[in-house]
Length: 102
Figure 1 (cartoon, one colour):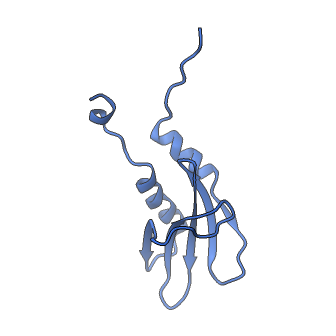
Figure 2 (tube, helix red, strand yellow):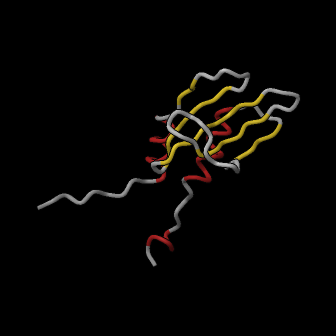
Figure 3 (cartoon, one colour):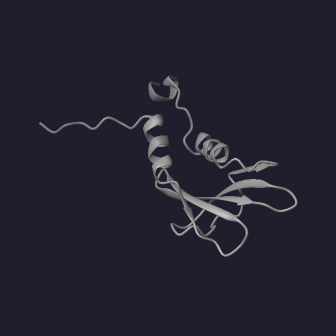
């Protein structure tokens, strides 16, 4: 008999996304990290200008922005971990039992 594969839990998906999180080189003062969630690529950008902020956009695997609208935008923050966790909360939402068991 064939084994049935159990669906991944939210924690497994978050752990997998964090495992793909890596910094990429840039030619500007902006620092950038890429990660993959739900088989899509994203880039987390840390801007340090007059106003420090972090933003997450859809991107190519190389980290070039493809999305026009930021998934998250944290002003007055340079905490990369907080930005990643906020993005993952949006990209990998909690699933309630009502949705799983209609």
